Length: 156
Image: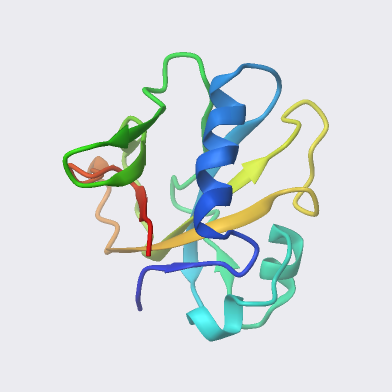
């Protein structure tokens, strides 16, 4: 497994979407635990989460206490800011917590949902895959983002 950016998400796009979520409205980031996750090459052309799910290399983990987590502009710690010291843009939010999952995961995909009131998997835009290999043992699982946040981009 590896961390990778989906082809639908250029470096500047994630920053722009984070700023959109922070502006308020019905959009949000949706964190989706995965039972199986393909490679960056397999994810390159998948334009929405319905396409991700339709691809045999990917499947969402929906059993054993795993569920999607939504982060929007209200109380989820979402931050999108420039780090002048390191000359990069960083996006971060609160750590993700699942109460007591009993099944395994291999990854985590964050998608942008442009409308949480009526969205479907076909409107979710996959942005990043992060490794999250967990053997579920009915204990709380916390996915803690590193100090640089869950996404950062530099100019090349």
